[in-house]
Each structure stands twice: as structure tokens, then as C-alpha cells.
Image (cartoon, rainbow, N blue to C red; front, top):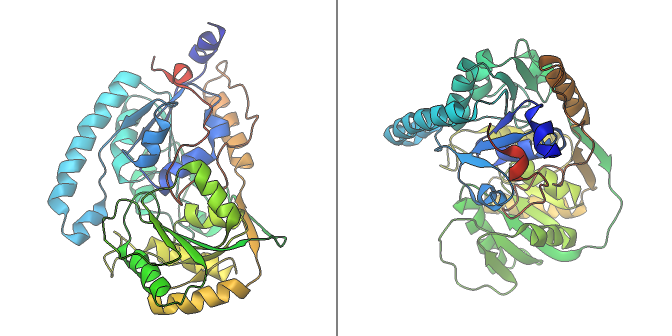
Length: 379
């Protein structure tokens, strides 16, 4: 009873994000939103389904403007119309006081309807955008009361935004690792080019390590190869064990994948998705890979041939650990919420995130989010 009474006195937060890395960035600031009554609006993915037993989750259809580039314009329009109607229903029923969003396309109508119904909007642009704001940030920025960039350069190119760069880098101490390579395509989209490159190189003897290859929803058939294990997904606990043991990680160039591997003292090789090769809607992963490689944190590859050289460099390169520290951002937002809603204060940001740095973009699975549905029910 006391908990419900306290929740009624605090503003209701809607957490809004597309699947994949956008959703994981919301999980990185869990110590903030877990102190408030809240619910989540996202897309239906393996990770969000895993969270549904402990979080109050609403789903909207996936759509992205980039779908038009790959001949799926009609499907995009249909999904956008469905998202508009679904989003209206959610906001009409739930009436949040605050929306925190990390984008992207599928969340636009959530922001639009919430703003029209009087909610305060906080737009946290993707950490993947180092040089300029994302298209979503530019499109949805006028709806936001607070615009937050995660790099100084991006903030300069996004008028009215504030900067909170969460990346912390330090040299890592040597650790005893197995001769194990973990390769992953991520949690949301298949990536046949990376998958096939790993299988090809392992079959040819160019990868001496034992390999665990996570392929997600892809259904390609591969003949058995000694020392190669192919799995669809990796539960969260098993993922942590794999990263503790693995010396090498090969991944798409998602920030979650890269940062989670670096936090576990793994050598990392990223093969960014490319619109030219039909891997994605845009080339933002090439930007991510370039920035991380420029900081000496990872090696990059474009295909199977360059992957051999990148793995050789990665085995010899100095190791670094990179972490995402959102404490300043969370303290700022908590103070802002208290200013917006005086007398309806939070309990304070008092604990660390229950996810490792960078979220769990390496593979989906259950995560230790402690908030529960009882504290996030609608009003």
C-alpha cells in the first residue's frame, strides 16, 4: 500500500525505444527510471519478450524510413499507419507525465501523441551518432523539451542540445583467456555476410580458436565444422560466461556489442553493416567502427579476406576496457524531473545498472532488471 501511494505521487514515465541498441540504451539508465512508476514502449524482439515477465511492456510495429531504400516503401507506410494508431491507443490509456526516448522511427508517434497530451519529452540521441544528430533526432527534436547528445561534436550540430558523453576508457590488466572466439550478429537483424565469413574462415583453418557463432533468426544451413558451434541465441547468463572466457569477439559494429565485449577484456573485431551490401538501412555502423578504431579500441574488417588480417592485429593489440558511465546524466534528469513536478520527487538514483556496460547487444536473453509490473502500472 505504501509503495503504491508513493508511486501515485511521482510522475509516470514512459520509456520509448525501438529494438536493438536503442532499447539497450534505456536499460543503461535503469537506476534513474526504476525509481519512478513507469512502462516501456518498444518493438517485439527476443530481448523485450524476455523482459516482459518483470516489466510492463507495450509493443508498436517496427518501421524505418530507410526501408524505402531497399524497396519496402509500401510495407513501411503500412507499418507507420499501424504504429500511429497503436501509439495513440497507448498514450490515451496510459497518459504518461514524462517520455524518455532513445528513438528511432517506430517511436515517433509515441512522442507526437504524448506531446499533444501534455507530457514532457526527453530525447536521448543514440550513442552511435558521434558527428551529427541522427535523422530521428532531427525529425523529432522539435517535440522534445530536452535534447541530449552523447558526444560534443554531435551536440554542436544539434542546436539546443546538452552534452553528456558517457564513455570511459582505461588500459586493462592481462587476464587468462581461453583460445575461444565468440562471433555474433546481434539481437535484432540477421547478418549473413558476417556469419558466412566466420564459417568460411574456420573451415579453411584461418581461425585456430574454437568458435561459438551466434546467428539470431537466420536460417542458413552450414555443414558441420570441427571447433565451430552455431547457436541462434545465447541466454544472458551464458553470454556473460562466454565473454569471461573468450579472448576474441567478432561482431557487427553496434555500440552495445562492442562495449559489452570491451568491458570483458576481449579483443574486438567489428565488421560494420553496409547499405551497399544490403546489410542495413544506412551506414551508421561504419561511423561507429571508424570512431572506435580511431581510439585504438577495436580492429575493423569489411569481408572475409580482411577479417583474417584484422584478427591477427587484434591478437597482438593492447587491451582496453571501455565503460558507459551515465551517473551525471541520470543525476541531471532526476533533478529536472523534480523541477518539472515539485512535490512528486523520486527516491533518488541509488544503485548501479543491472546490465553490463553497453547493454546486451551481443545476444538476447533474460536480464536482471529489478523493477516490477506492480510499480509500473498505468494510472
